[in-house]
Image 1 (tube, rainbow, N blue to C red):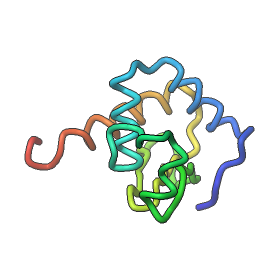
Image 2 (cartoon, rainbow, N blue to C red):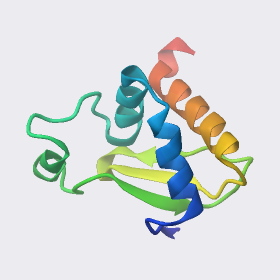
Image 3 (cartoon, rainbow, N blue to C red):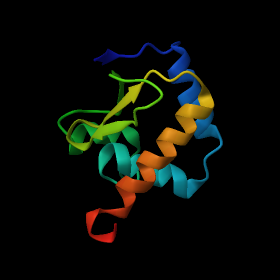
Image 4 (cartoon, rainbow, N blue to C red):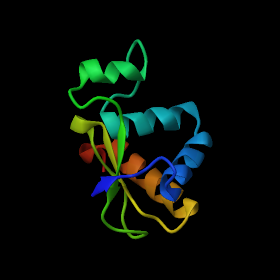
Length: 107
């Protein structure tokens, strides 16, 4: 594990994938990472006041194309494996967000 750098290829792909998201997908992603479905009043900077972990962070996760992103909502942390392409990242992230939003009682 370790944090990605701003210029890492996977991080660039992540932001490119997000550029194609609609508002509902962005809300779903926010809930996947933070446990909140909306940005706090006052903006993202307010995460520091409602969460001891501060703003959202992206960390390198073990695994590759066969792995799915994970999150730690207590730490506003997205654990993102190193993927071989933006398409793989997009598909894996979508699956992870979908199953996380369903909940166990609805599976």
